[in-house]
Image (cartoon, rainbow, N blue to C red; front, side):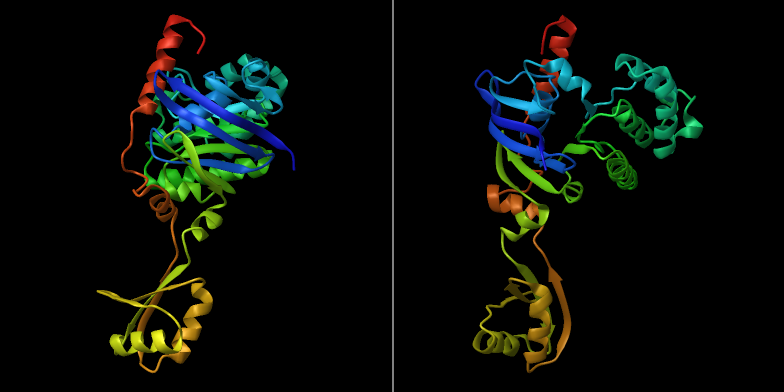
Length: 329
């Protein structure tokens, strides 16, 4: 499978601050690839470089075989973007927003009409197509932005915090649309998120912190890297059960308030073995697996929501300033 994104030693500095600090990775065609990390970790800065909205201080990147610095127009023509911040014209209707996007990308009128109809139907906005966007809910606007990002048939769709600001039900619905569209369109998805449940949708995740990639693997691979499962038992005699497991099963249970915690490589196979061997009655048993937050804690010593920096605010201020002044970003 060929790679459609390749980044090598990317660096982006703001004075002495390295918002992106030596980032390298590759993304295969058709992959759902994610950047996971707290706000300010460098996710949005990296995606902005790949989308040609920012130039790297050093390092190189290619998207669809085009250099993001030397071939900006070719990169932009071959990608779609759903920005973190709202970017629709709320005074236009949904159809008018899509029409404007089609004209900007040179989509032929005959193709654009059919394409708009199909995408509006897919994101369930057909009945609202001729209503002003200012009357839309937050979830409806994000769905329209998703349709707009796919209108010109991009090879890669970038999603920067695609469900930020949505309630849990709207986030779940948005993800059903994203995954359906990925299957229907056969495109590569590249997303950034700080939501742990969203990262589970990715085939591979790069965990970012302070501008660096500190781990890169599948969600299950990352979780396996911090250890196995934890089995929690309640028995009629926890002290006797703990002694038996140490002496007969070579396990090291820990007595805690909710029972006995036992770390095992694979809980599915360990639970039957423990239950059949214990000489005391078991009143309850449950199993927990490591989470992506456990991975982040293992790698950084803190939860993913902690110590969020202002690098994202700095980036947005820089981009807004450059756009107001008419300069190149």
